[in-house]
Length: 376
Image (cartoon, rainbow, N blue to C red; front, top):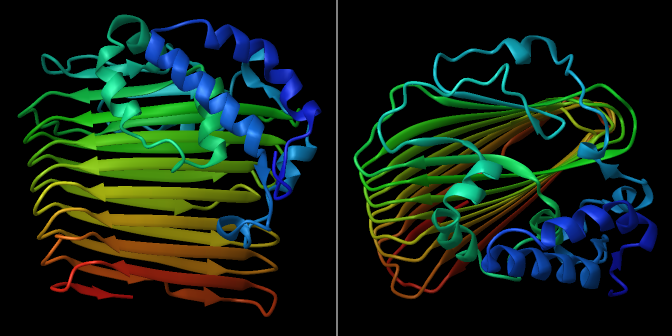
């Protein structure tokens, strides 16, 4: 463990039994993934503000709280009110404290070949369909929290859309939390694969929880040639909790990805988003909105990686800050050698409603091609 990280033994102790059980199950590639994630987290620990990528966000509080796996607690019902009643008429998966809730979930009348369900089931029935997606994530590029997720995730969501299938209704994923203030951690994962010329909309909601809840989320998305994905993500967890998410996407030729991130809750939220436009003519849109008050802290670190020519990206994150709240936006655009005719624009306007609020914005451009349009 380095001097720029924290990971006291007491932090990892409650997870040791579960980690050992998970590491012994699944195919070889998954066991390797879990083992590598655990080793990297133990080596690097919880980051501190001495690290460049974390200097604006202090997560040391996570290492000080004796979190335990949420699944070690008895099953509970969430009192997340209206969010539990959301019905967008399409397939719906509901998780409460990381547990799948079959009573409130609905997965029926899907086109042939479409799979919408639990990650637990997919790993048992078709692990090969997840292998390429997860192993495509380069080791060392993820945050240490994503490594910890790899070691400890129990369940999550899988969405597999075959070639040429266009779903008219959205797929909804509800992650609800019970209101207990016991220090619990939920490590969950989402995998989305959109085949060639397919189209799908996904709505992901995180709601509820107590003061000492930690949601540690990882998402991986692969979008085939000519496919379209719209991904809406709403975070309204209770103040005082921690919400950390690490998402990666890869796009094929002429594909379209639009993401909409809305942060209204949690005491501390951190999002690491990396999108690789790995097909010529691909298009990526990142839209974000955050409303903060009191002592809330929201951090967005984004990387848009243009790897092929004629790619286009637009990034707009807006914030409204009140009280003593803090926000960080670090947006990096990479244009690789040969990615000519790239067109990329980035913006991060913020409205401060109080003298105590502070918004930090750090745009970054890394351009290795000479025929591009990039602005921030």
